[in-house]
Length: 565
Image 1 (cartoon, one colour):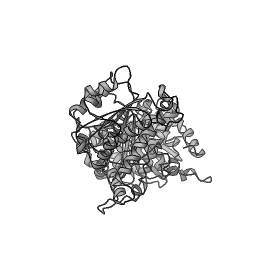
Image 2 (cartoon, one colour):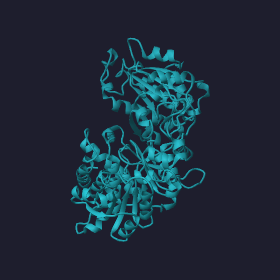
Image 3 (spheres, helix red, strand yellow):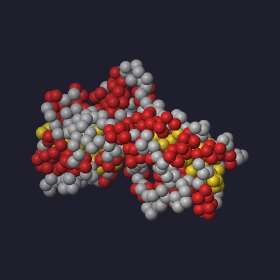
Image 4 (spheres, helix red, strand yellow):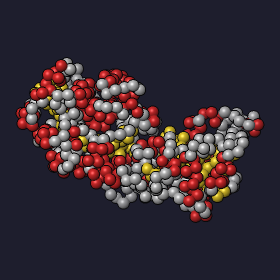
């Protein structure tokens, strides 16, 4: 699968590559700089159109003079991110661009590889001190820049940006900032790549729209590119291969410790030539043409009382569309007629209390149970949850089944058996179930990096509860008790803002329960459920309501069968 790395994991991979003697830090920096230039020209092909009188005699983009008249401003920081920037500046200059470099700090104090690339740049250009006035002078006037490169701070950012650099970044985030597109190397400067959060007090560009049109990163996407404010701040994302795969896949850190548990990306293919990208068809598998309905599993969804059955009916319909062979709505006596009148393929059974549920679940053909949507909060719900968790069934807990334990979360933790329970909280439910973890995750200010992230929060919650935790949002995070984690980000080309509609979460819990009924493990069912949920929403588009989601699943499954995903 495509891994989402932390900054420390990325540094470890680079360090082992360099220590192996197969590549030098200087070579990696050159590859990175060339990758940025290639990414820019592929993202904005209009830059390949010749411009200016000096371009007339050139017919190839790599020829000096082809880009005569094009102007770039490169902001170079005091570390290796700045070194990448100096490579970009030199390469653009060699291609005929007019390049202005604004540097932060004393060039003599740069790390060795960055200092070498600064010296190479100085053979053809100057480095002016980075100030807001210098930036305005370089990007304003009648000959505005065509491109601005942010190479101030990258994976090494561990503290808030201050002084002149912060003034520059805040200016770039203003509505009246330069019109030139901004390309960030690794990340928008000041963003923690482990959390997708701006380090320091809220405000400035971190509180606004962000300024990056394109972010170029290397080897693998980082966690912060996909969660928190990362997608908004980074703009489009390109991942460049710089030849580190042998050291990424071996994985053991230099200290000799076990390979660290990494986070995987569920969804888009960001690294075009990586063959092990997560593929839902592998998780879902092929159905046996001779299978019986019970071979696909029996799922039970518990319903609330009269006039509170809609959420459970949505979940039941979703479980059936997700492939469960049978789905039964277990309802209180006062809701049986209401549910039966609105159900056809879904069966209905009267279940008045926890004891009746225990008797029902003695049926070995029942594989999974979904509790929570519209169930109500209180002692009766807690008893139903306990009855389900006492069995060997696979269980999805959502909505009211979570809120019912808000006063005593540990009571729920004690009931959970690892590897067969999925909790699907949104942010508010998560805060009620895991208040201490949520306080760290939602702190208004991240003062240092690596900042506590949504991935960290989900992992800690999974360890506490011993369940698989699916923490919902546009940046859904799924984590298991052992530390395994995945991110499904409904951002960029997978953005589906119309999922913010009543009942969509109930459909998600039903999809997961249906997949678990089919025999898919809790972690994989949660990952695949999140992916199917967004795919169905993308198929329908704006105007979607929750009832539409299950009806879009067949088209998604057909595409998977046809090999389109």
